[in-house]
Amino acid sequence: MCTFIILRRPDHPWPVLIAANRDELSGRACAAPARHWPDRPEVVAGLDCAGGGSWLGLNDHGLVAAVMNRTGTLGPAAGKRSRGELVLEALDHAEADAAAGALEDLNPAAYRPFNLVVADPRRAYWLRHGGDGPVRVYPIPPGLHFLSATELDDPHHPRIAHNRPRFVAAPIPRPEADDWSGWRDLLAAADYPAPLGPEAAMVLDGPDGFGTRSSALIALPAYPGPTARPCWLHAPGRPDRTAFAPVVLDGCISGA
Image (cartoon, rainbow, N blue to C red):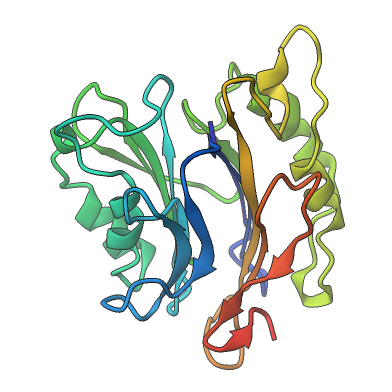
């Protein structure tokens, strides 16, 4: 049950801010974000060692892609392709419009249900495969939005219900000042109201080995390029126990 938070501000110098927690089984090996794919030299993403794909990535054009399982679809299934491939396929494109248009035509029978986000400094889309028909594409409007294993901004999802108001009230990150304190603290929040249960916490540590395995904070500048780099901070573990560090992009520290 990963969680993806996006704030869109179209006229701001940093029009896209992203926070994400990845929840996965402890035994599923992975590698931190890097340029893991020789045939895709423009892509920086975390590597799922089992499926060969990724859950979250960024390319040199300033496009971000992230995939999440939907409720009841954790893990691979016989005869189905890995959903991590979708992140890499999205990042083959320079813009969110092109990525969403290409992936809209996927054969839904080839994959278990998923939520996929593609976002660049100008556009953002939610691609929904609910196992109930074709892949559907929805624009993500300006403002703050939450996505997990159900619907965008689902008020009935415990984690969204509990945490979206807290992100709305938190100080907005200032990547130009390397100030992510409000969002970083919220990504690390393990508290939850008793009526909603443990699934309302931003970090999980389940008895079956399923829990929060990494965390990300990303900012996209209005015009990505050599003089305006995205910022990506990565925590290779639970963010309440693991420090964030900048991801290396193009041989330089992100945001440098």
